[in-house]
Length: 456
Image (cartoon, rainbow, N blue to C red; front, side, top):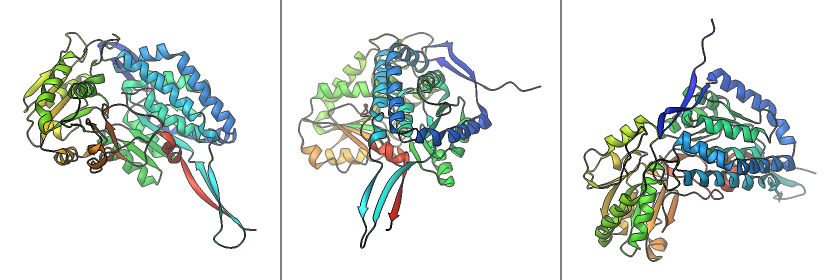
């Protein structure tokens, strides 16, 4: 008797009795076979030429735009993403595909003179082969797209292993992409750790977004094989507020960055550092802004903070509040969903969980700093270094005080959340490994450089 396949199930975080997706897992052997089919398809995809790849990526963008309402509703239902954020993600996803649709026409190398004598030196970038992508559930369309689109534009084929919690979104995205590309050029392999390990063990280039522990394992496995790898693995991001800042505006930005999408973004604000005289007014304004944030059904267009992705995620949130006084808390609706009230704590002792770990929930710690230099030291005192937001009324701090921040991105007078897909994205320390994602940096990652010597 043949054993029944393992099933991959995802549930609606706002109503866990609602099963969104229930499909067979590919298994490790099935994932490896998908990579081999993609490898066989890759030469044809590359040789089809720039015009074919550009046209295909443009067609994907158009298909996403045509299905925008359906995709947003699916992200609300499967990932618990508030409707306004889901709609914005779908819009950005289409823009990502359209941006990279121009990439096949970009130069792939350069011509150089020799050091002496006749001849030419050429550099040329070529695709690696099969791009293995392992992606999270929190941006179920945008993150797979900002990895897959540049990989495909450069002439690679793609095998995507999505987080189980976003399986339905990944399969629907695959239907749209597969309608525009040849067979086996883009494949989704539903599953869990076994499928992820198989993709990492067989692909020619690997891109991962997810937890630090898994990212470290992916990096070790790919590095041992000698294949290029990038891993984006989270943050413990700070918002620094200077006394000359517009405190009300800063508080609104920070509250949204703490609680937007229930804090389930690697760019969410986890620590709020108030410099000098900013502490007391910020304390009051942040508490007021947090209490005013709409929390509830993600399908409601007004909702900012919806449910957490799972019951264990809510348990981690509850555990993170132990040992620190609560400054302010918002509301959490009664009902079946995995909701958590947005919360800010203060006077967290050294070594507290909120100061050392990424909780991935709508919670942050308020911390005082004597001056900007002290704030920078606090900001740098954690294992992560993804993004820091700085709120100020002038440019002196920007010009003179922020070079010491050990983060990959700095956002001035803006929330820590938010990504510009045409610019490099990534962090330092435990926030990431390898080259940056997005923009032209992605095209470099998904290709390798060769040097040719042409003698007469």
